[in-house]
Length: 233
Length: 233
Image 1 (cartoon, each protein chain N blue to C red):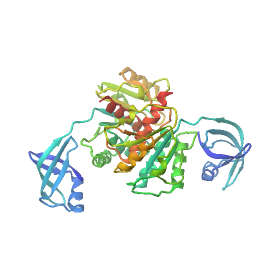
Image 2 (tube, rainbow over the protein chains, first blue to last red):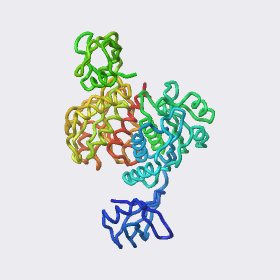
Image 3 (cartoon, chains in turn cyan, orange):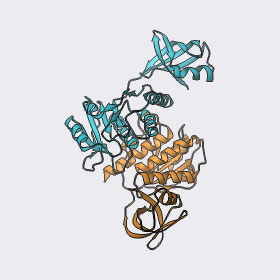
Image 4 (cartoon, one colour):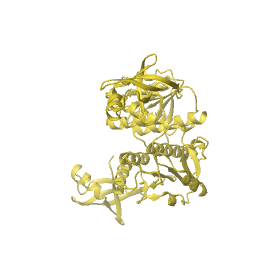
């Protein structure tokens, strides 16, 4: 089943996202009167009838709707990688895995401090459609300095560390409250950053015995955290 | 540090893999007498002195060597995906995560039954170098029919299932013995395949609450299995 992305523009009416219009109008050749399923990335799924369709806009009338609760909060804060393809890949995969919030962070050793957030947003939306999620991943629209993200008020805060003396993330306690997980750049966080995080209540955790690239570490941690949340249900 | 791949051709002598020669000779302009570090993908790392270098071959004399044990066996058997890029991506990532054996399987609903194994092998070797592993992932050189792989003698055998009534892989018992994990195609294994696996001693496990694409499911399962092995140490 094809699900389109759109938003409610007033009571009873949905407008498809601009990026969805061509697919609906030109490729699938939908017409006025056709039934489509639309979701808004915020838990609502609408069954609608198309009332107006052009090359620029598709409007539809809502016949019925259902809502889905958001998953428990897993917020991934991760350094950008030099090669942006690897981050784009990560965005798609953490969307599938069930990360709810994503922030790119600027650390002392990060090799990149910019990326095209419009592109990131599109990749996320595409993964949401593909994997039939009901909620978008909430992506922070700017790159956040490390010194800012450590001030997060999340109830459980982890910072990834290579050091084997720290607890393995597998042994961290599952929690239904919000979790923030920070992943550093290739070359890791500096000791100054780790100390700063510790002062703000972060627990250092290691991600197992294998050396992982930044984006793999991000997916590894997201997998364990979502799996533990599922297990704790 | 750059580590080259090569093999021992007789006592005391290493020959670099053909694929490594250009990098060593042309790009890094190594010369006779230079010291290089070479590993053989089977746990041995050699510190060597180059004795002969040309466009076609690099030979080196072993000065010292160390050996690293193999990780506990995690064997991933996974259906090929229609789009081969996704499988190639998976190969790189499971190498990082620490899968030890990889087999592509042909199931009833698999959309592809061929792939270029030489390319897969190169991607794996590149990931091994990148992530400083000491062992190659052992990749079965042919696509194995489902009816064959279920006869595996691995001590613990899991088959992934969407069905929520099955145990979550997170709750599966860690084990230091060999584990075989089967991941199906988009559209899942058929009931006939699941039954067949069950008769051969496979346990059905689910991979959490989120809908995952084939390659993401493969990485998800590999992550949990390796993390549990690390935890059990």
